[in-house]
Image (tube, rainbow, N blue to C red; front, side, top):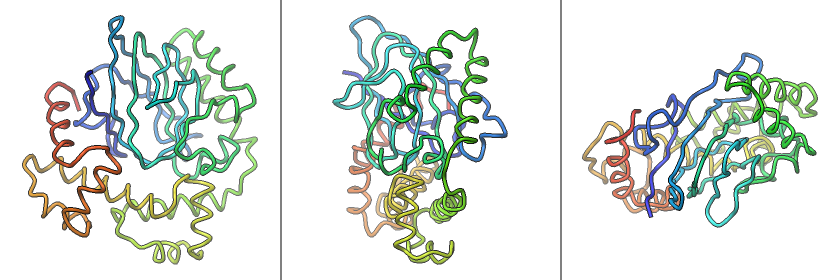
Length: 291
C-alpha cells in the first residue's frame, strides 16, 4: 500500500518540500485580520482516488490544534474512523491518515493559546484525540459544515467560516491574559529551537514552572517539555533541507540532541521513522511535488 509524507512547518506556504502531496491539491485561504492572532492558516484540499485504492499519508506532528470540515469522504486516522467535522487536539505523535474516493475539505490550524476560547474547553482535554466538533460546539459544527458545503464557492465558504469563528471569539469566556502568556512562552521555546529550559521560559514570562505547566495544558494542549521536543525536531528538519547528504553525528550535535542515538530515538518517537527513512521519504516527495 502506498504511503506518502506530509510535513508543514510554520514558514511553509502550503506544505514542505518533503511532502508527497500532488501539486494543486492544497490551496490557502486568506486569514482575516480579526482572526490572525488566533488562526495560523486555513487550507482547502481536494483529491480523488480510484475506486478501491487507498492512500496512506504520514502526517508529522506540529503541536497545533485543528478544526477539520470534510465535504467529501472523511479520511480516517490510524485505527479510528474520521468525523465529518472534528477538532483534532495537539499531539507529538505522527498520524497515518487513510484516504479513499473523493477527499475534499477545509483545515483550520489554531495558534497556541486559541483553542480554549474557540472550542470552549482547555486544549489539554482533547490532546492527542479527534473529537466530533458538535460535542464542543453543541451541534453548531455540523450546521456550519452543511452551510459551507452548500456555499457557491471556496471564498463563500471562507466567509461563513470567518463569521462563525469571530462569533465564538466574541462569546468566549477565557482569561485572555493567561492565553497571551502561554502564547509568549510557546514563541520563546520555538525561537530557541527547543533549547531554552522550562525554568528559563517560566522566568521570562513571569510565572513559576508549575503555573507554566497549567497554562500550557489550558492553552497549548501539550506540556512545555513536549513543545520543546517538537521545536527541536522542527529546527532539525529545517537544517536537513540544506543538507542532502547529512553527517548524522554532526546533525545531532548541531540540533541540540545529546548524541546520535538521541536523535534517532526522537525521530522514531515524533515521526515514526528513522532519520534515514525520513530522508528517503523526503527525496521521494520532493522529486514529484512543488514546494
